[in-house]
Image (cartoon, rainbow over all chains, first blue to last red; front, side, top):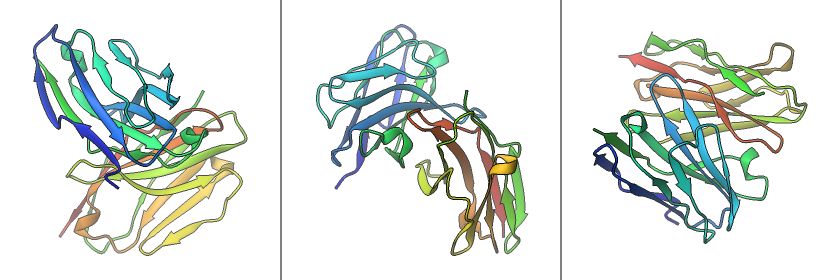
Length: 115
Length: 113
C-alpha cells in the first residue's frame, strides 16, 4: 500500500492564481481531512470528509474548496491564492465512520509559497 | 470547546538525559481521545500513541512513556535516555467523541550529542 499520497511536494504561486492540491489514499478509509501547518500554531483543520459525497468545514476553511467524489481522492482547491495561504499542507485519512477519533495517517505534505 | 496547550515551545537536552514533554487539554466531554505525533526534520508526521479517556493506565514503549492524569487534564510524554534521533517537533492532539482533531502548537526537542 502506498498509504496517503500528496502532489505536488512543492509549489510556488502568484497572488490570485488558483490551483489544486491532490490527495489520494489506498486504504479504503472513510474519513479524510486537510490541515495546514504554520509555525507555532500546530496543525489546523481546513476541511474534512466522512465519506464519498460528504464534506464539511473545519477551523480555517476560507479560501479553500474540497470535493469527495470517490473514497480514494480528496483534492483541495485554492480559489485565489493569497500570501496568507503560504503554509505546509497535510492530507490525512483514518478508518471507520468515526475516523475523526482514530489515528490519522498523514501524507508527506505539500509546501506552498504564495508570492 | 476543545483546546490543547503545549507550554514548552523548545527544549534542548544532552544525549542520554531524560526529558518530559507537557500536554494539557481542555474538553467538556467525558469521552475523548488523546494522541501524540512526532515530526522529524524530514517533515512527515509519525503517530506515536492514542489513548481514550477511560484508560488512565500509563503506557511504556521502549524508551517512551506516557502519563495520563485526568485530574490535571494532562497527557505528558517522557523520553528516557534521549538520543539524537529523538530530535523532532512533538505534537499532542485531542478529539472528543464525534469531533475533529485539535492539535497543540508543538514542542521542538533538540537532543545534542
